[in-house]
Image 1 (cartoon, rainbow, N blue to C red):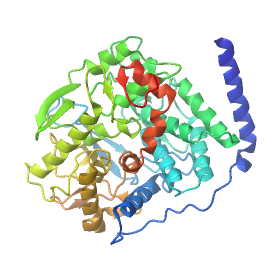
Image 2 (spheres, one colour; image 1 turned 90 degrees about the horizontal axis):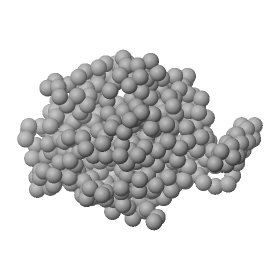
Image 3 (cartoon, rainbow, N blue to C red; image 1 turned 30 degrees about the vertical axis):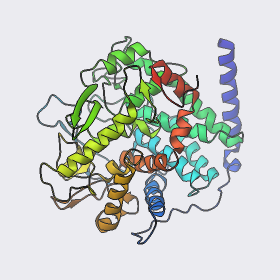
Length: 476
């Protein structure tokens, strides 16, 4: 065992060293990058409209990426932003407000993972050359391999120029296991896509493998089997004391952590920390749709059904607790739409063609919008990233956003992050974690590309099996 590990390490070192000397000449740019932005184009097919929306949204990750590292910038404005973490502080009647100043160096680790997934889509659709994309991806992994990480786990925000951690809060100044799981989802998918034998591809594969083996997910159990903790700090240890409990956007974190070839978590830890939590199961009916999971009345923000399922195909996915994840993802989306049509607070604009409550910018700052916290703000990413679940209704919303509201919310990076007709407010911002799911989930609806790549990864399949999941993708 030790000999094989040493031989593998030597091979990695050899490939890395060889490519480090040749990488400036080994990669050729395969033609020009053609992602020129367009305005609202009339009289086009639905397929052409999806092409435009995916391609223009991808520009956020390509043209606006950090010039030094290639990482995805957290957002495209540098003003002071207010952040409401309502869904974290459920015991509070009032939201817990923290303020941060984000400048052009601030990059999002989770958003970078989504950007990597979007880059795979871009190559497959011919918007950018394969070698051009690979050059960018190598730039990212070469930067990350030297950047701040803690037992192989990366922080939430990182300085894209220096690789240093940007603290998210007073004691949240270290590892973020959830954001790192999104990054790894992107990297493992890209590794599956760029699996050729050319020197650049082998170099990229080895870099990803280094990061994948180094990530110590078990460290975040704090030496026990009761909780998997979201944060760890070299200065504050586990003082954040925030377990990753569900049901929410962090199911992928458990799957990735269980899939680790070097530091996998146990099923016992998953059961204790995730399944046995008071917020995991729901079972109530809203607008005639049963919601299997989640602690929110009417369902929480829709990103719960999008972040994990960028890579995890919910169709045919079930666990040993008799949860059908295709039902969960679809019904949560249908409940969210039905709530917007019902519109109990009588906000202007809500309806069958204008729906979607999820986390994003608003006239009040950043809010995790949902039926329990509805402030009259629609995030386009909510309906558009639901294409695999509600294609007809998502297309209906897309056409409204594009044709009817394009003069207010359509721009060089796709749709603005949010809008409120009641408050005559239209965002000028775009966020990595909202733009990425649009590109990826529309592609999963159209071709299943990202699902196919990620679900075919043997480590991912092992992680799913370890946690008691069944899937049509799992090889027995």
